[in-house]
Image 1 (cartoon, rainbow, N blue to C red):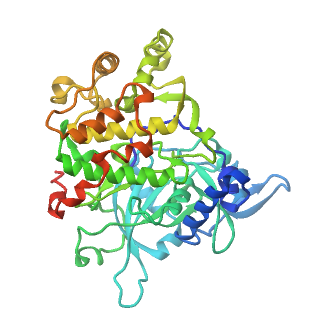
Image 2 (image 1 turned 135 degrees about the vertical axis):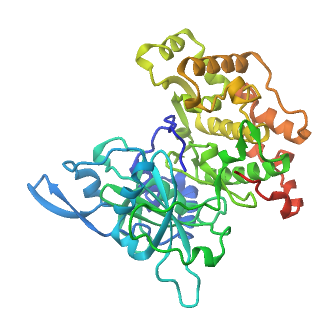
Image 3 (image 1 turned 180 degrees about the vertical axis):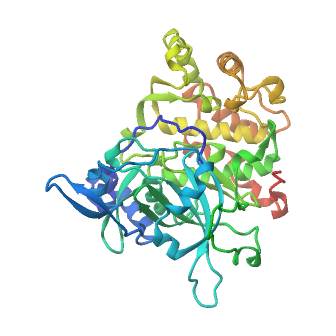
Length: 475
């Protein structure tokens, strides 16, 4: 569900600003945005945070101990003496994640398997334990991650302050869940059910797509009673599986549907002044008819005003080299950064650069790269052909350090010196939108509102029969 590295280009929005906006303590010029937040919150679940188990922490003021919920401000800011688990190999810890899920979650749901793991998360499959009379049980995916309170410093899971609509209680929950509540009405995102924070673990529960199973196949899967946790086949698959051996598995009209629905999701977020900062092929899902949903909002930029979209620094991460825009490549070509990137102290390859930018421009560039990938099978300015022969800039672990460095240097030179090559078999409408999104000069790229007006994004894929959008065999 998550990419192997996380982009660190975003400046985190202070928690209090999210809290104030939702609660209504807003400035006059933010009134319209608050109204949108308020309306969309009401369309989602009323009370999100469900784990009421109490954890014992030390009360430093009174030198005593007290019992508090994990989602309380007291726990988040005062739990300083507990030992917290470090991130480890997720595949090896699927059983540990299952055993440490909040007991109250297990009382609501029957967990019957896992769908896999990412860098930080393990995904379980479950159904409601007590469905309504004469109704099939609803099915869910449960995204579990390590939880680290705010007092413990950096965490891959950004936390936000949330006011429950039903109980009016203040809860500290993952920002991803807060954003998911705001997008509950849009089909381009999974629908949130609830959140469970339980000491060192957190779980986000979302409605599942089980359309590829009959009810006999999935409604009666046995509850897990002993390890290991059985593996499941997900009905919706990540977008990186739509490319194989640097060859696209979709034709143009199929790729148009996926790209158009991704753009719908991006637009919906931008209505809320939210920009998805972790766009990658791993962070969207396609079902058997190529209906597409964006996932993983933990690194999204939430901007109460326009100025918060403007940032001064970028983190260049080699795992996302294929997403580098020309202005970033130009900056990296300066002697200072060339020397810094190749210095012995930079063995990991990641590098922070000073480059004032609008994150919305960067995120639309990433979107353009994903669309190009879907249509070509390889990234902009990358050489076509088998990875074994010409390399693969997305396959960081496939090459040794020297070979990967060579691939990066060669591609960066093409970005600066060559025109972007586009498949001549694509329609003119498609070529036009690719050239616009991937223009070398920032000022020549369309804004989001301009991009949606391009003919290729005007929904002509909808004129094709459903049979045209059968997802290809992903092997």
